[in-house]
Length: 95
Image (cartoon, rainbow, N blue to C red; front, top):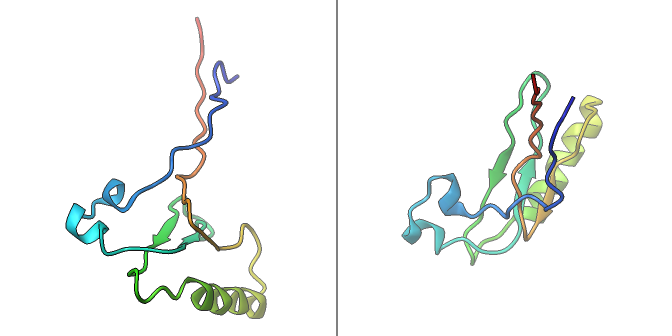
């Protein structure tokens, strides 16, 4: 039984949160492609693009077409300007 759940939305992910140096992070801009976990995995993938060459929408169209042709189910990838980390689930018990 969960004993606490935050009502605050998850914090926005920044490239620096994922291990990029501040110099590398400053070169990114525009929407980020968020790919939900593949079946059997729990890892989300975040694709940041350089500010002058953002191809999030075209890459998203390709991924969605691949999903349709393969019959994949589950959450779909998406582009967003405010990527957040995946929702975490936790359980706690009081004895």
